[in-house]
Length: 272
Image (cartoon, rainbow, N blue to C red; front, side, top):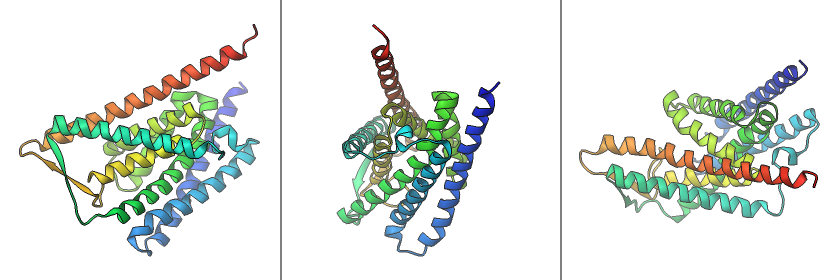
């Protein structure tokens, strides 16, 4: 009987945390919209990340926990973990692009007007925005839900809320659930498996940057997609199914890593 009230109290705090993060984001966006378009993402990501981190500290104090308990502490290995996550993210983008190219009859051509400086600014923006999203969703919320409801219930709750935020930003529900929702499962499992946020931040930023670079975002990247005549529908289907396949495979890989590491720790702590 005592377990259920604690579970619902934890869920209530997580939902309150998510609402507060959404308010911070909503308050930041109008201010950033008055700035040059090139730096809007950097400003939104930076200010909202600071807000999400401050809220994390506040809610951890409320729960009597530390940053280490949710994987949000920075240490000497964090830059390397970020780089590893970024590399894995680029690999996932490359795998997805290969599927789309072969199955969907797609190729990419260079856009000369997009130079190195634009790529660098966009990279920083996606790093800042990814930091904000991982702090807001896969730090305190995910890890607190995991401790009370288990890995997959926590994952589904956070993925649904993450998709709902994208719906609030203008996406259709189907697009948000398949896109943001499936992506959230990967980033969340990376957070749980590595017990930190550096790897999922790198993964998230690399996916968004790679997607932008091949012309799949609203703004122009260094390359644009060219589909052979008569294959538009096939290319769209290949992109969607390919995305679900590569993201799901990566999620299962992190889940396997988590199970192996958890089993090893349990065996190591057992009395001989």
